[in-house]
Length: 210
Image (tube, rainbow, N blue to C red; front, side, top):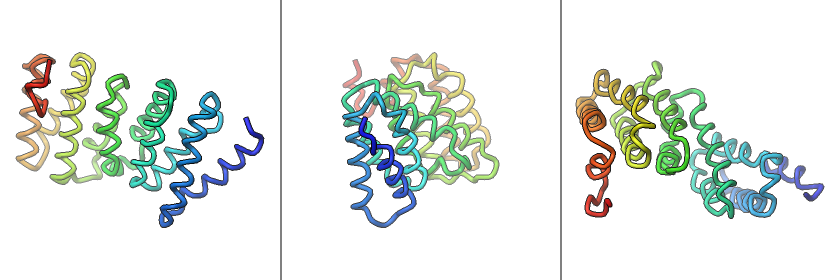
């Protein structure tokens, strides 16, 4: 491990406070990608996952760059560690109302079949049950879209209880009738249809479902 690598990484962390020069952020993420590829065993020691989460905390619009680092990693183990850190980040985000800025991340995590869906379910639960936030139609629809992606990507037995509670709350207490009706539909499908039937109903191209 190069002696000055930690110093360079510490200096780069200052860029998370800078929102204007896109070119500078590109340099930062190229450097982080080289660390992920070239020094994968030292990634956690260098706090690369924390660095990526910090950038995302300050600038949600940097999500494509953060996910690009994860997708270009040359190891499934590295990808798992990065997604695990991102999942933990969004599940613990404060205040919960800020979670609505990260639906792109939630959908990505929900579609990753080998990742524990509890991160996404925790984030959705905190957002939906947050007493200080009023859910708009747009946010409610994004919540339901994320729910659909989870149902499509994970075994019903794994997600059943937390999804049941979430959909029941939306179907009962949501002020918008459109959101209530859709949540009620998803709730009935979850409780009365099996995994195969759900996949067929929710899949955009049912003929492609095996």
